[in-house]
Length: 444
Image 1 (cartoon, rainbow, N blue to C red):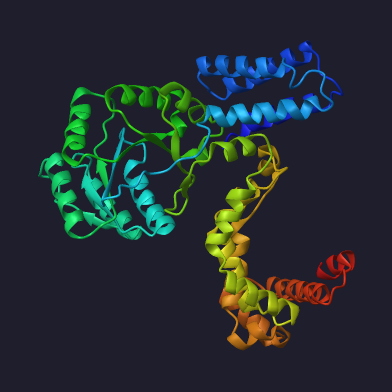
Image 2 (cartoon, helix red, strand yellow):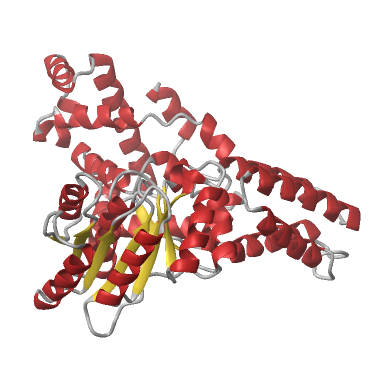
């Protein structure tokens, strides 16, 4: 996401950093490059004008010109203004002191609203420990109810549905009564979308809003539609006073214009972002962290949060003891590999690391299938072989290769590299600095 914009902004700011001092002309040149980068990223032209005006005024003031480190000051200002542009502080769903908290989902057909409903249900269940129900009120789109029943179940939510013959307002009212009787913490109401904004859609949303009195109204918009998404959000803001945006397909939006424009145009912040097809690829939107990622500063906080969700503290301590005692096995290695993969695609994780630009990640080929092959090889071993890889010789290697659909060379390479890794860990456990060069040569 934001690849093109990130690359151009980083290049412009790198040039600014190279100046020992900054003049008014240097600032004007940088602002011109930033303006072009934002426009090419499909950011709303009014937003671009206001953004560059604010940044130029701050950069032309005493906090930059004449300072010992003006380049860093400019980067700091651009970072702060980017974060402010996208909403400033992050926010989430406002919970009612008297459950159930009702969340109403709105949006056009094709925006990913039903899937976003299930993703939000999973998020609230996993992150807040909430008991969640979803109401199937999209009675017009073919198979919409069946889709919600499926993905809602996968998300661990109770699905309230009454088919497609009843009025959506009546279904929403009934679902709220059910949620109260069942003691649910949250009820998410999935409403019907349309191919375009019309009076009928808006009136139905207003009627459902009156029936269930939602605590939060979320508008689901497709980032891939660029400024059309912003226009849709602006029209919804005029007709239905929604509280925040769920931005879907953000991982596929290389430009990022919608994400950078929607708050400034509608006054409503992005609360959540969908960053992939899987239910777990859904997270709170943090404007400050996103600004840092755009500028190549990484997003270490989000990386740590993902890791904390996957790694148990007691398990981490047990793993540390195993590493120190040279008891780390292929079984342990497989467990760690699975936990890392649950954090998300490797390219996405690398994007959270400082210094990785979108251009660098484009050229970096991370073959997730290689991880599948490693897992297949380890799973084709017996428990004893995983604990004692030195047993894997001759016929055992052939059996493992056949069982994993690979070849003997792949098995040999994995066993050899694992042996080198254990050797390095053993040396570190004894307080010695391993000879990485020698280890790398032996692992080839």
